[in-house]
Length: 463
Image: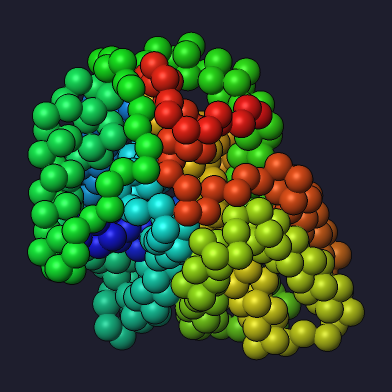
């Protein structure tokens, strides 16, 4: 229930981003019902979507730590649904731009509320793999969006001014189903206890324990440790900022490196893949969706197949390894492309392998920042790193990479690949030195809650 109720929103995000990228060419055609250019869709609209996601992450992240995980992951999904529906009704560019921003606003809030809830509800033994797979499910939506765009852009099935609108409305229908499931997902008992709702938290956990005991026929072991908590209604923004930047500066550097690295690598590939296939390999615009579906499949298989290793081999070697491997492979892809050794099929195969590793690494960025900071700062910390990293790679990225990949000059596209690969590789080096061994450890042992009066057990390392 938790995985489906919370994780499936990433499918919506993947569907949303991919559909817009694939319908850009159709929207710019005469008869689409929207006077807009392809560059405006992939440039201005994409940047506004990302800007909205950054703003939404910060705004809803603050509210999530203040008012609870459950209340906010219902509100943020409602914002997404309303904005997506209104995007599908756009008849002029400014309307389309405004509601692309608010669609991103809702999705950004989802990232903060959902990642904090997932980590606080999933057992530590499985936290890494579950978190990676849920974040990686974005690419299931991307597969659906790519294939859906092929159908919706077929003018023999739907008129040119109808098909693209229906794609947005289908996203709304899927979101409504998720909203119904999500109503049954419980609040985080950690958040409840710290915020003065100890009786409710105890009842929730006791119900889970009784259910597990009944299903397994075994009594659960007693808790290995205890913490005395001074309950509070809220945590001030200055306290959060001091904790992130002063108490844990090395962890802050790690979080920023991971988010900026993955944002640049993904923008280097995904914001120009369609233009690359059509300009350099003569692929028809209405067929690029098939290629992207293959790329998206590689992205999902990465977290699915590598996720278990983050809990067994360990966080540091796997985070550093996936970042470095994907960066080096993208450098190799740039070299092959520059030498004229690739076709549309082999280029797609290269992207698929690069993103197999990059996707696991990118998902681990969300896992990392949700683990390494105290409970009271978790949602806002996720929001901050997502916003800064995504703004660096996701707002400047479309502007930089769209121009490079659409120029039709091989050297420009090679430069785009090299930029993404270089930043990703640098992030991998940072992870090799700064990533923490969080596997199979309780969240409280990784970062002591700010509300803790004293902790039985070992001292939490600083930095």
